[in-house]
Length: 243
Image 1: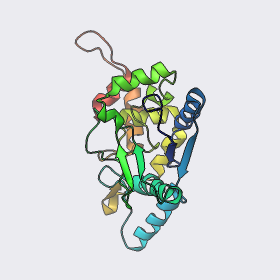
Image 2: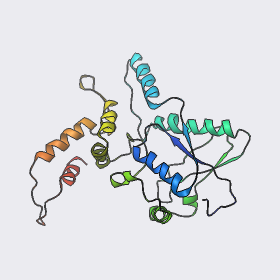
Image 3: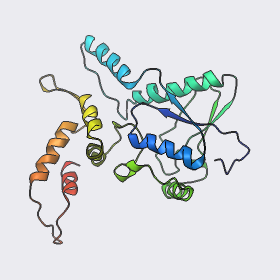
Image 4: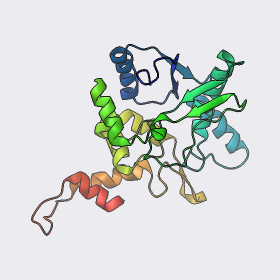
């Protein structure tokens, strides 16, 4: 953006949910250093724990149990990212027409419309989509600039909170291997009460505890050669069973 539109006065912002991976914060520092830019960090006045505590208490008093955020109910994105971003824009630029540039790729799902301002003074742009840039193009940009990829790309394919419900089971296991404390924390938010038929978990078909139990059970089993005479690795065997 800085090279293509040198006449624009750009301000770089990052909406911090407070639940980001450590690698995300490391990458932000790398961006600041390599590109020599300032990045404004926007955070909600209330953190995830505060929202979760209030919601859970309210729902329990009403005689039912809370549900976790999901692709159909992305309330965490709204309260931790979208609303704080809207508040920051209207506080700092209340009388301006704001042009907001968002990095959605051309090959991402188009149901991701991004941010829409309540006041209506924000015009949203998707430069990657407008220029037809797909994953390989973004990869080239990152490598050519000297930034490279965030370290979580070794085991995860997307940015986001450590408990992101869009994670695959492979990525959940990657979280456990790299940040077991965060995995345990995500697991603590799941609600399972068999006698009441209640099960609110990050994955629809398996809880994080069940995923670990299954993983350990498979790790103890001897692996057999396939038809090609090769022995599959343990993780592949686990994933072949649970997905």
